[in-house]
Image 1 (cartoon, rainbow, N blue to C red):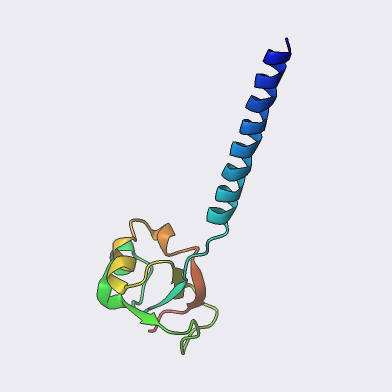
Image 2: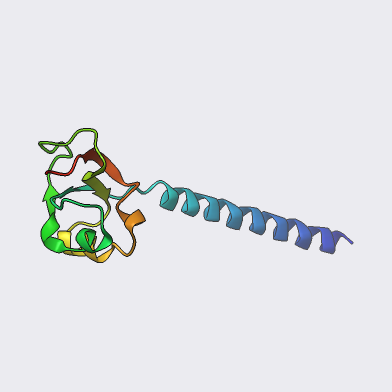
Length: 109
């Protein structure tokens, strides 16, 4: 009986140690942050095909772009993609742009 308690106690201690290592590992990865990049939308509508056109976007160093205020189409969009090509490639639906706006603007007449 003493032998069983000794082995059981060792097993419990090992499980606690593994749980502690797992918790530290999970905490480390969940606290990692991704860089945020800002893209200025140069298109004049909210069509998916326009969002997927690389020439309609430019990478900004700061999120404040001229002419951006309240409006109906995206002006500056936040993304974790670090190049215009990667950003445009990541757009598969309008919700990949809409809902990630840093600012909006009105279309130009």
